[in-house]
Length: 470
Image 1 (tube, rainbow, N blue to C red):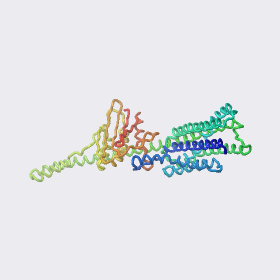
Image 2 (cartoon, rainbow, N blue to C red):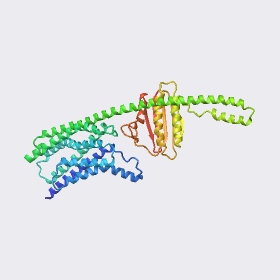
Image 3 (cartoon, helix red, strand yellow):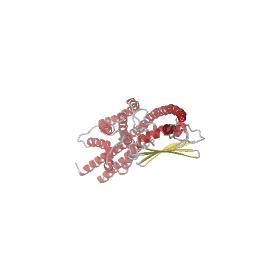
Image 4 (cartoon, rainbow, N blue to C red):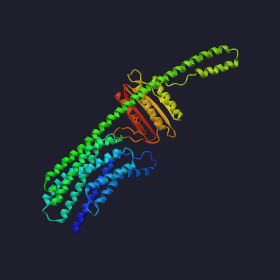
């Protein structure tokens, strides 16, 4: 091998390695929002950051290791099996890191496998156009340094094109794929993967045509049929559009399912709230009636015991105990009174300081049961979070400014919760079909009144603010 051949081969290998690194990087970017990300870990600050960085980069490192091993293997290896094996290896690593939602990870692996071919076919058009221009300008100049320099520049250009194209594709996929934490079933995977397998088959046919032409003629097909590159690029664009369409269709299915679950849970909560409040009100009415009767009996006994001083003292004490009014919530509405009374009792049983400055707004069409859904879900979450703190507290307050009614529930928190980019809400930590819709239902109720919710947290406290237009 001459010196120029050595440098030519070295440039080619560096270029291959650069493309593999770029693909590995965007593989990590693609899968990162779908991974759990170390929930519940008790690492130190520096160690935790290092570990999270390593776990975030691990799928890309494994992919790059497999691809580089094949690229620098002494014998020629077919690219399709290499792409498949490297993508499968990355899939295994993501499953090892986070064993939730395995069928979604298979779907992401299939998307990334296709994305490698799609970006290659799209960037090849631009790369080929610049290459033909440079060959027309400098092809007849017999200078090894010039040709090597042009070759190196073209390889750098190819790497830049791949970086931009993959970045755009991954960004569009993330934008379309909104429900990243939703579980994907095996049946849903089969439904959304069927069109993608057709796309993969098309890519295989294109690759077979290139290999067959090169084997028969010893030349690349695009050197003689320039339209082939344009046709391939068009197919790649259509393929990517198909990927986005499949993801969008899946998102619409999940959105519909989520709305149905939210409505069912919200309707169930309101119905259960009405039944529960009716039972509590009946119980309190019975207690008030019993206390009234007892007071009458005690008054009669007082008259009978007027001559007995000790009996009179005992009857007086008994009267004070029986007739003493239990402290009650006065929020301005009996429905919210019941909710606040019960949540205060539950919080105090768990040694949580409970302060309430809540008042139901007067002269509005605001449904007390809608407000009770907000209070019930918000206070359930607050109690759950506060009980793990050393100095737990909950503060419930509300105020009205003209037509705007604000409800705030603030509680102590052991740590800041992760907020999902798509929903703006923390992911649920509870299991079960009826869990995970508390904050979503609070937002749904707020939006009924043309409002919304906001979350404020600093690692030591968590505050939920609900705004309603009344």
